[in-house]
Image (cartoon, rainbow, N blue to C red; front, top):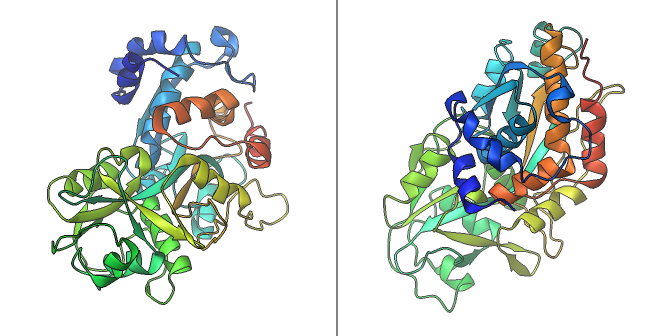
Length: 373
């Protein structure tokens, strides 16, 4: 694991101005197993930009720091503008890759044909993380502290049907906790968000009788207050007693989190439990020859130890780029991201679940076909 100093450096990377600071961190990074980053002889040089899912921000910053430590002539920047904005920017041809918490729509795949040199864009998973239901409740919340809730209670809170913390439904699942009569303030994303899509997918699948809205990237009701990006949601939660929202677990900070009911038990958000859910979920059927690797997450799982509120986050890339140098970079970059060492760097710095096994091999198979000439 990196030292505390290196972590702090990684956490603040957002521009090229900080690149020189990371060489020391990269020296301690385990070598990747793909052979994608072999130092100065990799032939990767130039400036490359990505944008998209804010949930990936911490992982991408760590990947950039370590990748650039071995590819000194590559300068990489990532704008955590949100999944929707990132894919939209990718479809203009302005960036090399996009990060998104929601798989591409068929319309987006069709639109990508005008951006890629040939074929259409594909998406592969690179980052799996629990989405925590985060709350700020005086005397109750705190890092490592949890309240128990089933999917129906969570759905009714976020749909404005449970409005106080001492509601009988919450009390019934937490009989040993003295809950206050504090009003509940829901905090949700204001921007188009893959995290919102994953969260509403969970609510719809696990609590269909209490959540009448379809899964979507835009928040579907007028309950509570809106905030932009994951950081905005977490910041808003911290500003008032009685708030509750949803965010990548890595951003939960010192707030309390909800242990969700799965089967007969309650499961706290954790990387291993999230990975267990994703690895047991089926892949979406794709047309023959498609390079897309999309997981149909089983949000309604009742398997012991699964944590079903999960973000399976993707990168979007072209099979061929109009600029061959960009293709060479994206193939090498994503090869590193998916490598054992790339996944370990993300896990060490964000608490994400390291991908592996058959899912990673399927993703690498697609990435390795990106044309570099």
